[in-house]
Amino acid sequence: MAEKKKGRLTKVLDYLKHDDPFSKGVAFCPGCGLELLLRFIPRVLGNDIVITGTPSCSAPVLLGQNNQSWHTLSYFGTLMTGAAANATGLVRYYRKAGIDNTVVCFNGDGTANDIGFGNLSGAAERNEPFIYICYDNEGYMNTGIQKSGTTPFGATTTTTPYGTVSRGKNLRRMNLGLKMAMNKIPYTATATLSDLDDLARKLLKAKEAKERGFCFLHVFAPCPTGWGADPADTIEICRQAVKTNYFPLWEAENGRIRMTKTVKKPKPVNTYTKLMKKFNHMTEADHVILQDDVDYEYCLLGGLSVLEAECQLPVSVKDQGETS
Amino acid sequence: MSSNRYFKHQGPWSDAADPLMCTDTGDWRTKRPVVDKEKCIFCGFCAIYCPIGVMVMQGDTHFEADLDFCKGCGICAKECPKGAIIMISEGEFVS
Image 1 (spheres, rainbow over the protein chains, first blue to last red):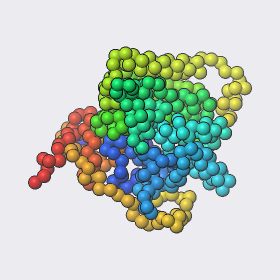
Image 2: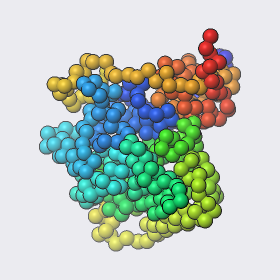
Image 3: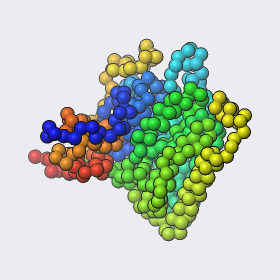
Image 4: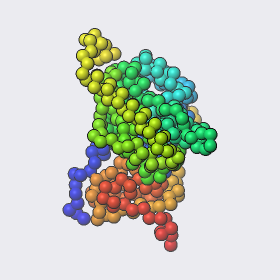
């Protein structure tokens, strides 16, 4: 056993410089993508961050129960309608008190995309210096799997069930990351859990960029319970989501989009949908609609990234982008 | 334990000296990850992808799950590039 293979350890472990602030046994479902993300963030960014969050799957753990807590971080629980506004208040207090601190606003897609979108876009407009992380599990999972704005076409939820009348969600999903990138904030990125190297780099980049203003991270975090997937498949789902271009990985600095991972031969979207039960009922025709939607979004993103690289922005616009 | 240098004291409702809450999540497990020490190439993928972070490094030879808290989701077995981790039903271990 002594002549074992040293130096082959994955590079991701180098990013995990800090202690895990959470206690070992935390009440998340087995295979929860959120738990992996939640433990990952303070281990990369450091334990001196302040997290603000809303009622969501993360709240029972982050907020603690009775008079005890599950972790040693500082947490500020807010309402879903005012997540980014409360984080703004914290940031302004720290600035006034002269404290150099990182505020992380950690919300689900329901808060970020639906209920709290008003003050999210307000904070983006005012360019408040904090990091907003949205973990996207494509629905209101904590309250019983209702559909949200980011639920994809065809997905079954308790409010868009599959039956004689309804065939899953009949609307397309919204692209939250792109919406935020269009605000020309200092840093926007999408990340997922299969590519932790990429996620850690983006987190550190966001911590740097938050000196210049608002940072937004859109993280794809599967929910095995809500999606009817095998808990063991959590990482595989993330991987297939990237490989089918269902959830492309990109980053945008001052609105300039750059793909961080390009897939040479994207797989058809049914290699992703067959991994979970929420797409079980989908026919060929349904898949065509979903595939078209995925292709459309990817083309748009690809076009934007090429445009940003090729087009010569006026000098004044460039300066504004870099100084704001 | 806390490395928070900004807040000297907590609110009146909490005490920083209190031990953290901890659930016995090992109880939930129906399948147990068993690591084949010979096959393990010490890449660390099971440790980074484990949502709970229970895969503990054993020297520099292999990883072993902390069975007090492992929820038995099976991500480590799925992500192991060498197939060195297999999930065995808990019933096998009942004596």
